[in-house]
Image (cartoon, rainbow, N blue to C red; front, side, top):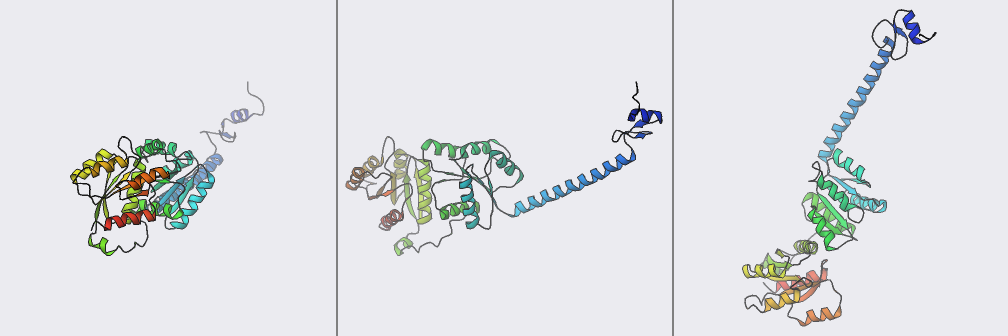
Length: 328
């Protein structure tokens, strides 16, 4: 039954059907001309907006290709802000982006061409690193991990997931800027190198054996020595591997960690001194201990001396350099 006054009744009484948009009676089709015109205008506006969005997206892609973009990810707002400020001031030629949650991070990685991601293991960095490495779209993006943790299992997991650098906190702004710049540009930290002494110039490269079972400490010690000394560094992660290197290659100096399983630094020193072919190679013990009894034991041994690890101080580097000069 048709209700009096309805659009259907009016349309049928006039011999037509109601417009699906406004209900006015029309002869044919679904919409009247007025509604169709409105739809055309709306489609035109939406088309213009889509073109603008497409143009802006293409423009951003071109811009991304012409600039280096660093993405900092940290759930702690204060640390995120400080890191961003440090990098913006130290690397003004790069674009610094910052996110504080996984969803924004993933969207940024998808929509932008990121040259380096900086994570913090103390603030969900490990979880974010796992998500990055599991996704085929950006699993090859270079990642730097920051952390105050030095536990071996954490460091091992970080490197197993694939990071280009691991920097311990607290770190100086200069160190952070230098290492970020080095990762992106492949250049050494910008610093005027001291002119090497005449003795060092006579022999431009020395062979140094670096032994440490801690992979994180080993990498950090190697980088410190490479940036300071004109030497070729051979690394080993156990005393047994170190002995094999000494038996097959000529070395000018050995740096060995005191605290290693099975054969520690002092035991390794005794093995070297027991070998007539190797006993003339100076051995420096590396340790992070402040125990007076342990230091006294090292001083009483046949070691050439000892240095702090893994952050070898300027005094320690000067001592290593002096020991090498005696090998000219």
